Image 1 (cartoon, helix red, strand yellow):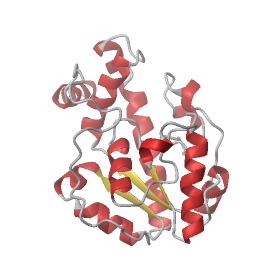
Image 2: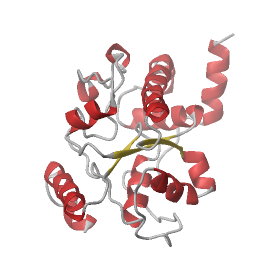
Image 3: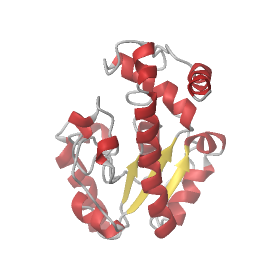
Length: 232
């Protein structure tokens, strides 16, 4: 089914996924996370568990249904090289408000994937150089503070929602997820999501937008060393 839906308009494809959930009477699940934090892997895993996310397919980057949407209130801290794509004026105080703006059913659950900070910084810098956000490694390092602030605000927002709505929002560590795939089963059950396929072991040969031969210009150790130098 996913292969077929990928061929049509993303917004319409997501509507079909949502309609299927509504028709079956099952609780819908939306997935979230910053770029290069494992969102595409999480998406594929949820499909193979039999629970396609309501925002499976990437709509416009400024859409409230996009998995990378910056919901946090500090809009000025959206990185300057991302503001054109991800800038928005969404301000929410309650989960119901978020669901309403994104046009999710009121009982929607949310699963958020989070990569460890320094590993994420290395990954997003490599991706940013490829996407021409940065001219080179040094230019990327000049933007470290913007990246860290974006990371902190993004995950502080979702952590706050998890603290307030633990039965509807859950933040999942990518590293812990890799060490123990059963965590994704446990998280879905915690969120009231029925697991259709409990036999999937988390192994995927190839993930969308994550080529195995992607070039790595910056390593986690380099990022860590740069931050240590900046803090001395």
